[in-house]
Picture 1 (tube, helix red, strand yellow):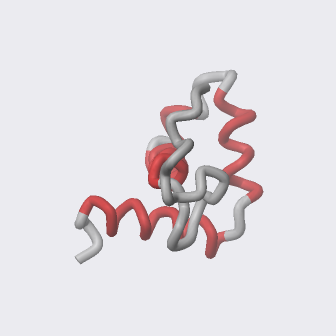
Picture 2: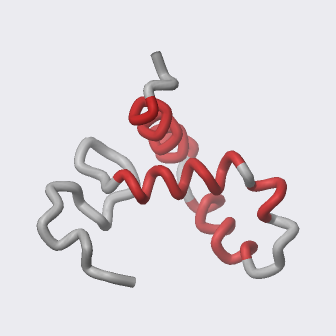
Length: 74
């Protein structure tokens, strides 16, 4: 881990929302999109359980932010 976010305006602790760090919502979106492949990897089960703890609305917001960032949502 590093502290590259030191001067960034985005909040590295937020997964979703207007000031969420893009790396967080990209990561959540990646995990969701590739879940079927990733769950075959034993060590990924712990990380994928974090997705299960998210509310459906939070997960939808994360996916929407990722799409909007890439321009796929228009």
